Image (cartoon, rainbow, N blue to C red; front, side, top):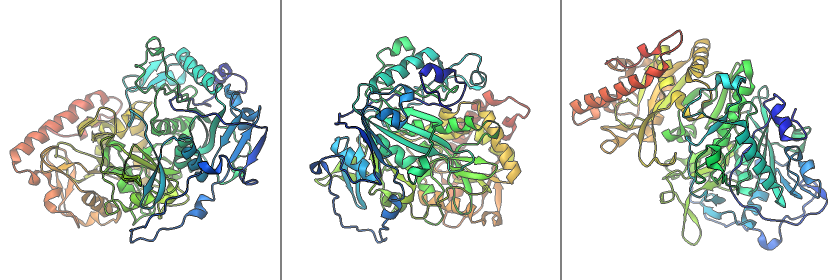
Length: 619
């Protein structure tokens, strides 16, 4: 259980119990009075009527009927406003040292959060075709900063012995963490109000973790309400003791960054401690994607001997697991497929019972979004969704998904019930197909390739793809990269540890591994063209429909994988990338270059009982 007196006790408890976050934002004072107001027992207004926003009525041009999900929204109502001198204690945050705010807005409903966002002037109301939604600008931070992350190095601890220390997991001291934690708590003690969200991470009740967020801004609670698993009513929160606590003191800046050995104040700082799964980020208004990733890694650590394999996962009725990085750009659209029930579009776990969603929502890119190209995501942008860094146009503030002057990494978060065919339990059995989704900027990889179990280990550890513009700070065009396990920036242990987990799953459940490439064809980036989502989806569909075993296969002489001779709805020329290049000799040169990159990258992974490098490309 959590310590109830001081930060020192929390650190010495020896339990993986609390996660703290320091970021940047704004706050507004409100009046206070003694008492607790529950949304289920009163209709007292939070703001004067003049502050309320009236929904903008629009003519829906979609040919698909708009489904009224008001009854689904109403299922999530554990809202309360806690007021008075003991508000923090009643909200469960005084044990963190936070006792200043006299008004706590806890687990606000979607409608209440919308009214707070408008009244606090935290962004703008976007009049999307499917309905009004709120939009925020996260400032200069519009993507991940994977290099700005440090982990507290607790000398002699289990985490010290197991963490894969290096450029991804940079060490810092417990003293630095304690200073930043104290700064966050002291700041909250100057505020009159705060937002608190209690929810859950993980749909599987056997490994589900409880999480508490403490915020300054309503839109931040809106985001986690979208993305984490919500309580249906107040009874779900009876006796709630969080396994994680995230403190978001987002108006604070670390002036002592140089003394702390961190990055300058204009960088995002990530400082988790795996002894307690503490996490600190400062000077950032970016959404909570990095926090979400850390909590999933934390959940992985929590499970101990029953360690899960957390992965980006696209799950359907005919169950598949698709592993890829968000910068691949196609993983989200592929997960929103109207022909199959959706378990989730991002991080999932795979344990002895099967796969399950860590989340309660979806987080998709909006660049060039149209109803024709991505109907499910387009229609999800409606009431209760939230846009990030999306340009608005006209007097009606209509979202302009083609305006990337702010960033190419515009996003929308929305609760999973915005997808009509979502699978409500958000759990399923074991996948029979494992798809590694790559984005090849060299134009060498085929759109689909079949792997042996040994090749699967090689390509999982390699994690070859391309970073697409906007997903990370500083990336302005597709850049080839090797991201171990397709998520190196988020791994705390050595990649081979995760590979062994996947190997066990593949062998136990007799799953077939594939590579699906959504990158360039007919030449490298700048010369060839990127494969359409239609082509990529056709490859995935053919795998899932079980028809692909009926085709003829050809072995690639360099990479060793097998390529199908034909697939319905895919040009057979595209299946063999060399045939798409105007000059075959230039393709051979590009293939040799990429193969050498694979070989050089894998040198550092030639450890353990099995040397998987023998299953890579042959030069």
